Image (cartoon, rainbow, N blue to C red; front, side, top):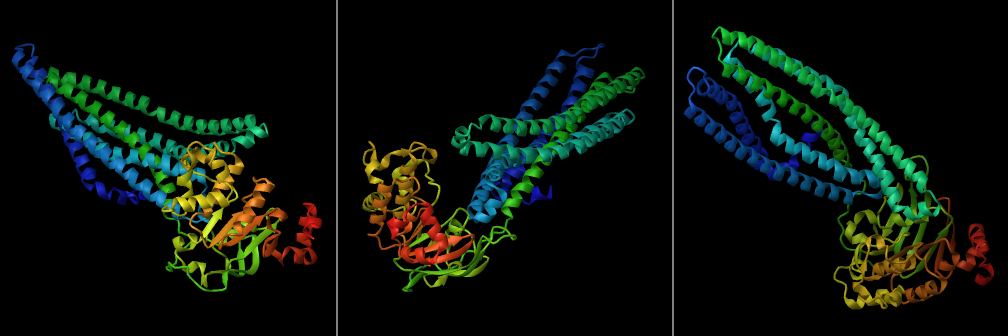
Length: 577
C-alpha cells in the first residue's frame, strides 16, 4: 500500500474530485441506513393488522422513493468524480511513465525489456485506475455501512444486536483467511502476464522468421503453455476466492435465522415490533454485502500494490545518462571525433570494447569492419551517447560528449540503424524526423542521394505516400533507402551507416557511395562487406572488442591478418590490389 501512496501525487489536479467523491458516497450510505427504519415504520404503522393505514403506507412509500432518488443523485455524483479522478490519474501517470521511458538509456531499457514496459504502461496503470475509482466510491462507504448497521441495530434493540457482534467478526475472519491465501497468487499472476506479453511481442515482430522456419506450431505450444500456466494460477486464486461467498452466506443465513428466532420471541412478549425485526434482517444483509465489498477491495488493492511496485520500479530508475549543459557543437578542431582509451561492457563480467583509441578528421569517410560480435555497432552507439563508456572518453567537436545536451549532440548525427525502422504516416513525415522544418528542396536532395527518388517518383502520391506500420508496404531495400534519406535531411555533421546497405544491390550501393562523396559531412560506414568500405579514407578493423588494425585498404591488406582474411573470404583481394 505504501507503494500506491507514492503515486498519489498524480492526483494533484483532481483533489476536489478525490475529496468530494467519498463525501457524496458517504451521504448516500446515510440514506441507505435510514431505509430499514422507514420500512420498519411502514410495516408497524401502515400494515398493522389491528388498524392498517393506507395513507401512511403511501406516505412512507413516497419517503422511500425520495430517499432512493436522492441517494441515486449522490451516488451518481460520486461516480462522476471517481471517473474523472481515476481517468485523469491514469492519464497523468501514463504520460509520466512515457516521459521516463523515453529518457532512459538503452541499458535501462534492456534491463526491463520492451514487453514488460508495455504491460506496465497499459495493464498496470489500468489496475491502478480501478483502485482509485474503487477507493473514491467504496473505501469509506463499506466500513461506514458495517459500523452504521451495527450501531443502528444496537439502537433498535441492544440484546438482539449481540447477534451482529458475533456475526460481523466471523464474516471478517472468513474474509481475512480467504484473502491471506489468495493474495500471493494475484501477485504471481502479474508476473505471468509479462511472460505472455513477451511471447506475443516476439511472435508479432518475428512472424516472418517463424514462418520461414516452420516454427508456428512450436510457438503456439509455447504460448499455450504460458497461457495455461497463467490460467492455472488464476484458477487457484479463483477457487480460494470462490469460498468467500458460500461461507459468508452460511454465517449470514444463520444470523438471519437467529434474528428471526429470538426476534420472534421478543415480538411475542412485546419487546420488539415486526418492523424492527425486518430492519434487523436488512441491517445484517447490509453488513454482509459491505464486507464482501471490502473483500473485493482487498483483492483490487493487492493487485494494485503489485502494479504500483512495477510502476515505481520504472519511475524510480536512475537515469544512467546525465545530460550536459552545452548546447552548441560548433568548433574548428581538426579532429571532429577523438576516442581515447575507451572500455565498455553491457555487464560487469565481459568487456565488449577494450582500450579503443582513434581519431576521425573532419570530412573523412571512415569504414569500420569486423566479424559478427566484434563490437562495431556497440562502438558507434557510444558516439551519440546511447550508452556511456565505462572508461576513457569520447571527444566530439573538442568537448567530451557528456558535456553536451542530448539534443545538441544527437542532432549533429544522422544515424541509419541496422534495422530499417519507419513509422506509420507519409514518407514526407518520416523524412522530417531530423529536421521538422526541412524544405522540399532538402527532402528532394536527400531522396536523390539515397537513391530513393527512383521509386518514390513512381508512387502516385510521391512523398505523400502513406507508409504502413513498420514500413510493411515497402521492400527491404526501399525501407533502407528511406532511412538513409531521413538521416541526410538537415545535413548533419556526422553520418553513421550501421550496416545499412545490406538490402541494396551492388549497383544501387555504388551509386549511393558516389553520391555521398558530394557531401561535406563526416561519414562513418559500418559494414561486414569489405567492398562497402574499401574506398574509405580510413578503415578500422574490429576483432573481439579490440582494434586489430587501422589504415587504408591497401595498407591493411599488408599489415592486418584479420582484414586480409575478411577480404579473402569475400573474394575481393585481387580486385582490391
